[in-house]
Image 1 (tube, rainbow, N blue to C red):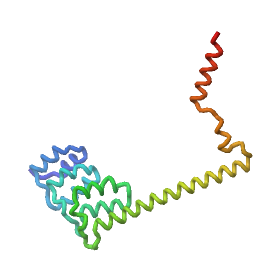
Image 2 (cartoon, one colour; image 1 turned 135 degrees about the vertical axis):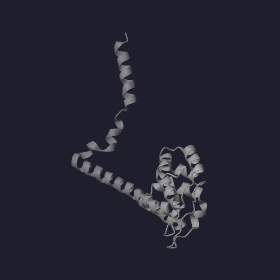
Image 3 (cartoon, helix red, strand yellow; image 1 turned 45 degrees about the vertical axis):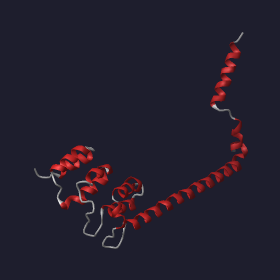
Image 4 (cartoon, helix red, strand yellow; image 1 turned 90 degrees about the horizontal axis):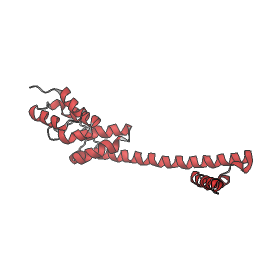
Length: 180
């Protein structure tokens, strides 16, 4: 029986790990498809890598020397949300790829440190945006106070009762009204 890549992709998509395992035991995966299958697995379902790593050469490289971890880190450069979803599980599964250099003398370790720096910078910029929005609110309340007086300031809203307070007051008034 010849190897059919579509069958393997279907098992990965539907998360049929036992069937995938049995299929790979019977059919050997061609060497030129190892990295492609690993990439597909990372894109669709990272958990299938646990099964695939027993049947696939996980240290296979592309023409430019990129391993699976290089490729995944490069994907994360465009979308930082993939870092926790894809890169961290790959580091646990393939710790030996952490220091492998490609043809451009770049290691996944360098790419990961770059990604972590970018994530930290983006989180710091969000803090700046929050403080900027607080400043805008304060300017807005100043403008409202100038335009309409102190009618709309936050201090005026402190005396307003909450829904629970209102409901208990209504209950007391209702009972007092109909109590003989």
